[in-house]
Image 1: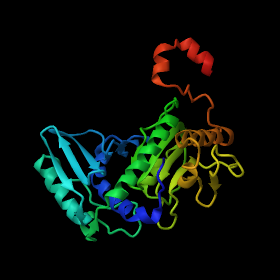
Image 2 (image 1 turned 90 degrees about the horizontal axis):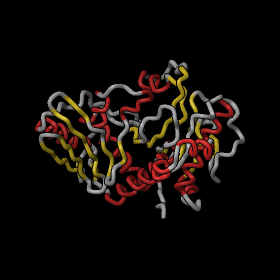
Image 3 (image 1 turned 90 degrees about the vertical axis):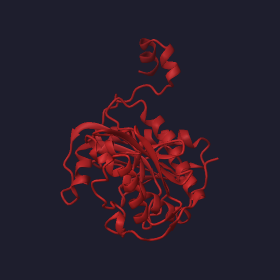
Length: 311
C-alpha cells in the first residue's frame, strides 16, 4: 500500500527538513559541476537522505540525514559525530553541525544562505523558530521519496545519453530524474545564475515534489526544456496525469498514482509518455533508449539477441 500524503499534515516537517538538508548540501557545491547540477543531488538511503562521498584535503566524509531516527550522522575516515534533530531551531542545528564538523577537521559550509524557500530568513543562523521533530511525518517523507525513487530509477535505467543519478535537489526539495541531450539552449536572462546554468542544454525532467503553500501539489511532475509547442491534449500514460500550461508542468497527483494497479509501473509509464512527447514535439532522438530489462537477463543473453528482441 502506498501511503496517503496530505500536504497540510506534512508541510511543517517538509519545511524543516528542506532547511536542514541544505546545510550539508552546501558541500556538494565544492564538487566539480555536472550538467544540470547533477553534482548536488542527495541519495535516498534505507533510512533517509545522504550526500555522496565528499573529499576535502585530509578528510573523506559523508553526511547522512537519518530521517527515520531523527539525527544527522557525519561519518569521516577519522571518526563520526551525530547531531540530533529532535528539537530546537535551524540556527541551533547549524551551530551544532559546524561544531561537529570542526571536530572532524571538516571545514564549515562556505555559505549559510537558505536557498529557494520563500519567506525564509536569509541564513541558517537567523532561523530561530523552535521546531519539534515529527517522526511519523519524517517517515512519510522518506517513504514518498523512496517509492518515487524506485520508479524513477527504473524509468531512467535504459537511457543512453547523459543522466545524473536520481536524487533529491536540496534547494527545491524535489526528487529528480533528468535526461540530457547535447543541444545548447538559451536560458532566460532574468533568472539567477544558478538557474540559468541549469538550463544550458536541452533536457527532460521527471520527478516528485511535495509542493508548497501556493501550489500544494503532492505528486509526480515532468517538463521538457525548452518547452515545445503541441503539449495540449496529449495522453500522459496514466489516468489522472494532465498538462498544466500555467505552470509549464505535466502533473500526476499522488492520490491518482496510488489508485493505479501498479504505482511503480505507472511512474515508468508516465516518464515514457513524457519522453515520447519530447520525441514527437521537440525532435528528441527516438534511439536514445535501450532495452528495459533486469541485469540477470543481460548477464545471460548474447548482445545480438538483445538487439533483435528490443531493436
